[in-house]
Length: 83
Image (cartoon, rainbow, N blue to C red; front, side, top):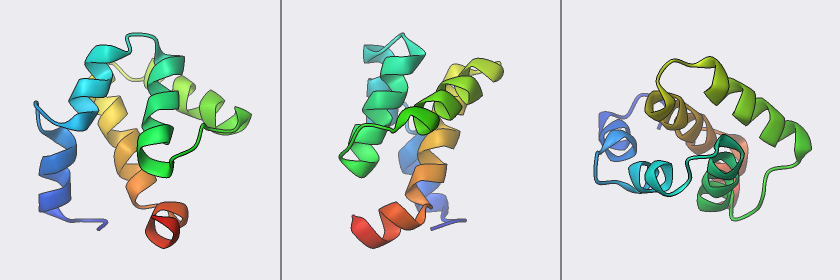
């Protein structure tokens, strides 16, 4: 999955689920919660949420940051082995 153009197109699609979550949650802490619920079916633990929010806050493009975070979740061992 790491380099899949198909997955990249799905994550970055303007009408996709990540875009929908971005539009629905303008607060970055809620955005991170919703991404974790979407990819892992659980809320992030405190350090995951902190790191996710800090990453999004540090990036100039919120959408790109959310897509990066989504991509990293999809390529995690948790996602690959549990979902």
